[in-house]
Amino acid sequence: MNFQPPSRSLTTRDKLFITVVALLIIAVSIGLYFLNLTFPAGGGEILRHWVGARSFAFDRIDPYSAHVPDVVQKLVYGRNAVSGEKPYILDTPLHLLLLYFPLSLLSDPWVVRAIYTLILEWALFGLAYLSLRLAGWKAPPWIVSLFFLFSFLNFYSYQALLEASPVLLLGFFYTGVLLALRNEQDELAGALLAVSFYFWEAGLPFVIFVIWYCYKRGYTRVFAGFGMLTFVLLVSSFLIYPNWLIPYLRAGMNDLQVGYGFTIVTAFSNLLPAYGQYLAWGILVLLIFSLGYEWSAATRSDERRFYWVTSLFIASTPLLGLRSEMSNLSILIIPFVFILSVISDRWSRMANALVFIMLLLVWLMPWVLYLFILPEFEWAESAIFLLYPIITVVGLYWVRWWAIRPPRIWADELSRIS
View 1 (cartoon, helix red, strand yellow):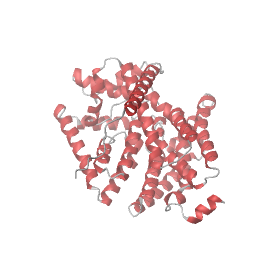
View 2 (spheres, rainbow, N blue to C red):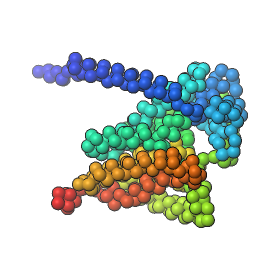
View 3 (spheres, helix red, strand yellow):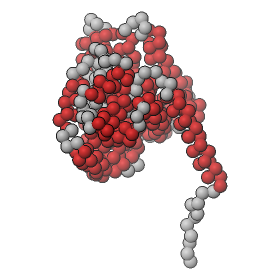
View 4 (tube, rainbow, N blue to C red):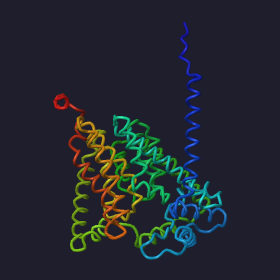
């Protein structure tokens, strides 16, 4: 007797649902595109990639030459950059710059910015959604809605969208890597790591740790996925521009020598001129020792501890002395939602109130500092930079015990009920 498998054909109701969702996505995308066209001056991150790709594709100008920052500065500032402003030197390796080449077909920089910002907005939605999935957070619908509002309307996400920074795409890729590893989709994790291999100031410690963890665990398929995609991109890049490596390294060194952005030392020195530098170095050394300990313990731990350690690496990156910017802090959504999920699981009776208070404070404080304090006091900018990573690192250590423990035991359940 032959048994037929159940039919997988879509019902009329399924088709109607898919159509409605597709139309909704298209309508939202169109609305966001026109909203993006109204953004104030900015978008330098995508513009430097667009100018570099377009200059090379159409004018055969070296993308790592001074031509690119000169053009981008005039688009963003209306003049050449002055001391303290970002010069927009292109320091993305050519094999990843190839991914921006489709945008070089467009001639209007502001249309390019609007389209790329639209991609970032959907990436931010995906980042928030995948962060919830990673955390396994079963929050009430109103808390989930509040979290999505926080993700889009917090100060750091706004800065990333205003600057059209690829950090939001990288955050989406980082969560994709962690989910792929959890689901044993190692080749996918490797491919996502391959396209995340730049913008080091946002996630270098995270990327290095994940690669090392996969090596120690023997996840060879991760390296297969990483190697295949990287090989194809590298071969393509050397075919179209064989000598790009030295100009790229030179551009990266030039960018490192320009004074802009924030480090933990400069931020604390601005806040506390007398002893801020010593405090910053103390925190930096303490963080390095803490990360070293967690690094060494990670390979002997389970999935819960690995997730906590990766969250710690993401949250600590702005405090490790690397030069960073406000927009780079937008990916701290990943560790922040992990903190909220542990709070929700551990303190069930008052969890919603605690989560609401934390979301409100982390959303409100940077905006208050930016809108009301910064116009009068320059130190407020450093406070805004330090606020989110410090809260997140402290929060991760606050929930560490419950985060890396096995699932809730019966004694916890009794205390929860009582």
